[in-house]
Image (cartoon, rainbow over all chains, first blue to last red; front, top):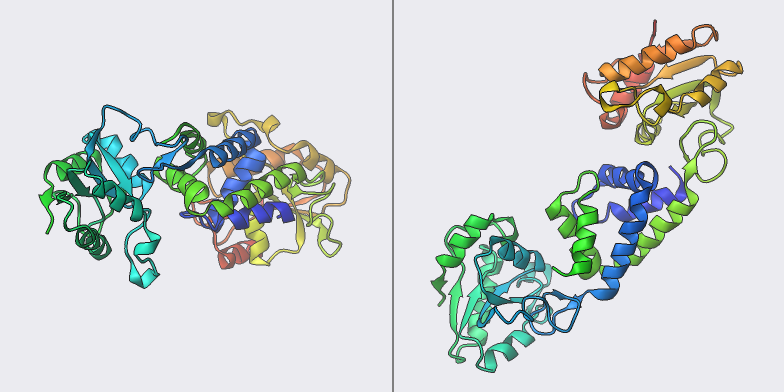
Length: 197
Length: 197
């Protein structure tokens, strides 16, 4: 339409879930129809980009050294729930069925996509398990081959720590990720977790 | 997740076509997973917001006084295609089936939504038709009740200008807007236009 408008559309359509028409629709909305929404959004994005970092303990989003979950004294630090991504953590928090803390891997093992152990947030997980504060590790990873492989890798990596490993289980549909499950399904899956070997 | 992150998600989910999960997904993508994409997008949005305005003649997006269509000497200024929105214009341009110019109403008459003639870009349309340069006005508005009412209003508003009115017609499915049609359908509709009375 115009060079600067087309640049916006080109950048928007690269984002996940957006195509050419939805990018064009969003650009028109922000630049013409509801242009009063643009500045607050740009300012919020810039503020978040400056403020958001990874929690030094679990890898969740944080604005201080620790995320709100790790900094919350009412959470049980002996129970750690391992998730792939931050939205998985958010989905479990929305279910209000869990009182422990988390560890975010930021991915799962996927040799076909070139994702190996070095690409995941595993070093700090080893540290957390080695210092004896963790009694149970709940593996809330996707119910698919890559999720299972990642669970297997984690348990084989840390065999002698005395930590009980469990695998989130009942209710999670086959082939689906944690983020797609509803709150009741997640509660069932947490309650019905089984030991992992 | 964090206050600044949640603000971004809250603003994103207000945008057309985005809900809570897609907003969360986009925010995570821009702030964490592919944060190198954030600055180019913010800069492109700011540049477009500063540069984009409405074409003084037709209402299309422009960066100068006239849009690229109105400024193009190879376009036939005697044939004017009236569309509701800028994406409709973009869709017709993609069909490469039209050599005239445009007039963008920025809406259609919709009493139920409080959209009356004063809300549409009609004053400049009257001016364009009155000065005798236009020989045909192609009404490429949606094939629905509001689109028909808008066509009727335009023709009744300007009865004695000697301008031939035509209505884009064949191929546009009932109830659908111009922006959803594919290039061949739009070409058929332009070729098969019928006189409007």
